[in-house]
Length: 196
Image: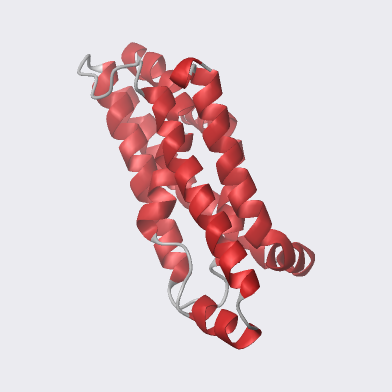
C-alpha cells in the first residue's frame, strides 16, 4: 500500500515541484522564507487531505460545482505577483532591493496555491479513500505528508542549483505569475467555470 500511495502522490503532484522551486527562488535570501513556504505547502496539502477524507466519508465540504472556481485563487495570486513584478521593475534598484529583503512568499499564499492546484487531487483521492478502509486512509495520509516534505526539499534543491537558481533569479519574477495565472486559468477552464 505504501508503494501505491507513493505512486498516487507522485502522479498527482508532479507539477508542484516547479511551483515550489519558483516559490523557493522567490524567497531566496529572505529570512525564514523556506519555513514559510514549507508550512504553506503543508497547510494547503492538509486542507486537500481533509476535504478528500471528508468526501470519502460522504460529508462533502464543497459542492462539485464550486471546485472549478478554486482556480480564482492562483489566478488572483498570479495577477498580484505580476503587479508586484511590474511595480518593482519601475522602482529604482535601491528601492527594489529594500522591498525584496522584506518580502518573500507568505505561508497562506503558498497554502492557497497548493489547495487551489489540488482540486484534481481531491477528485482522484476521494474514490481511492472511499474504497480503502480507515487503516488504508491513514497509510495514504501518512505517506502523502512525508512526501510533501520530500517535495519541499526537492523544490528547494532545484531552486538552489547554480544554473537553475540563476535562471529563476533572472526570470522567476516573470515565471511565477505566468505559472500561477496559467494554473488558475487551467482549473477554471477544465472545470467549466463561468461557462468556459
